[in-house]
Picture 1 (cartoon, rainbow, N blue to C red):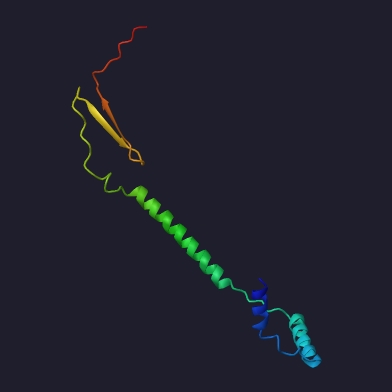
Picture 2: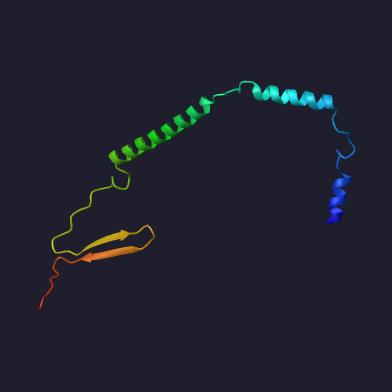
Length: 118
């Protein structure tokens, strides 16, 4: 560790410079005090905030319009031919798929009757 410290001290460019004179220090102090006493510059950046707010409103409005149009206009899947009613007494299948991929198939038999023995 001392080797690294020694190398850093040897390579320090300010090691061989002299300290600033009293006149230079006073000039720097006056410059700093003058800058701190002056009125701060207030740069209002409303342009960026307005642009971001306008973009957010446009995106939200576009999403609402698309949602409303999707609710009014049927999709290509639901606009297919109407499903014909099954023949009387025929078995009917109802199929359902979950988002996870599980398929559920129900077979409905209209002639099925539960024989209860209570």
